[in-house]
Length: 491
Ligand code: SER
Image (tube, rainbow, N blue to C red):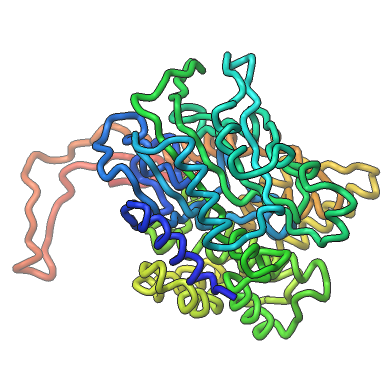
């Protein structure tokens, strides 16, 4: 059986043998693009080349890219841990052609790699093609379908709509029709009952997309129009963790050697077993997943904080802390203890983990310690609030309480929502936002400083005499009254 590290290497080797330059992953944290906080697709770092404003050479490239999908157009956070194949941070294996090969070449390479090199069974593979969209004025991608027909029987080619088969980076930017490759990993009995083609894109955990091949042809402008790109571009993204699962014959990404070493460590620390109880399993998966997102983010220079990208990371980390606290019985820092295993397993492929090991460990420990100081009180408050609501026959937590949890106990809104959801409650998010707004107003007013005019007592020059004297008789030349945060003082 190939290990995860061997599979990653084999992808690079295959595309290298096809004339691709192997390039390193771009950082997961993006500092210079106002439309994105985190890399959410392998193509992000090539956006300018795709739009024609940067040199395209070398025109064939391949890599594994660290991606994070927790905000914006591509957001998988709610699924993570509850299912077995979505992640916050994941690796995307990609090959690119900037004005070199196009649909036929990309389809042929993908097929050769999966079937000839990795020996996946073609009978388990289904492919999708864009069915067209009247609204966009686009017809079916017959061209891609004709190339697929060289490799797979007609009943393994499935039409997909704009949602699944027209890939867009965000509200604006490069986009185009795409073909996905799905893998059916059900048992032979299940396959005999329901053909895999009926389960493609239907959220079946055993029939999942493994590779997306995007035929970049357009740029989406802010007014919604599609403008042809200066050249045709191939952008492919294969879910590394899903591929490893396929290659290792597992039914869950967490059963592969990408996650098992971390889960084993979780078992060792908690004394609990993975695979015995659903809520323990979810918590172990959440922690194993979130740990990677937070560690890689810190390695790339984004520390948890109270604003923007930093707050996204803090929210992920606090979500994990709460799972560990409630379901794994961890009343003290836990995630930071998993860092040595993560570094051991992934440090070869991503040397930044090794280089930043101590920083990552300390930052996570600090964050855990600080949240754990208020977590229990917050959970108690939330539990009593829910009990009270239950008595009143209500199922919605008001925004004032949700805001108190945020402001006093450090509960991100999505964490409060998560706990509420687990107990059959919703949260009045609009009211929460209104409270947040009020808080900002208060802070603005509190920060305002009011100065009265100077009162001049004497004419004269200020002088510093501290180098020569420790005591000195002096006179106040002028003073004024300053009012800030309701405090008044004189300066
Ligand atoms: N950009 C596509 C995706 O992210 C293929 O790489 O799925």
